[in-house]
Length: 277
Image (cartoon, rainbow, N blue to C red; front, side):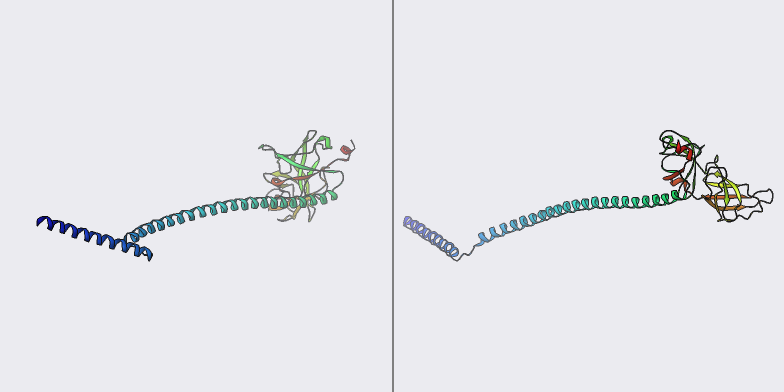
């Protein structure tokens, strides 16, 4: 009896297990036929979806960084190219302005040269003397060009100085504002005579009587006396007049017509004898 009861329970359990297994198979095939997903499929889909979303986000983030980097490189290259073009344009503009300015100076120099007594020769300043004792410049003309000691040197603005030394291809010019320089001049408005000497960066007008009518702003020109500078060349403009209570002469300061710190192109007034030689 006991054996028969045990076998009956085993058979019943097998029947139940078979029924459950069959039911599961039916459910699986039914769900696959309807293309539906069970809990495990849904859980797997959720995990895969999160992974794909994270992967897509990371890929998009780094892809955006790479795109921005490439665009930044392109912008840098474009900026470099534009800066180089701007530099070239600035250089060309500077050269153009310099060419125009040089052309204007040379045109004025030519006009001055035509008004001076022949012969004349143009020269270019190539050096300055840094000595504390003398104010001199070096020009690119020398004895092989007929330049001699004592010849006057002028520019468009006015008197510059005199040649004091020469070599075959170069010459040294003592500037008019050097204390060792002296030029016979007249006050243009009333022909009062005097001598200007270099005084630091300007001139001092000597030997003008206290009774002479000289005022600030009067123009001072070469007198033609002494046989060095032709008559009528600009020397400067009176900047200060002091009439002392005692003494015969006035104390007069003259602002030079020429800017001695910016000399570039000059004219040398030559002697006819030197040209003939």
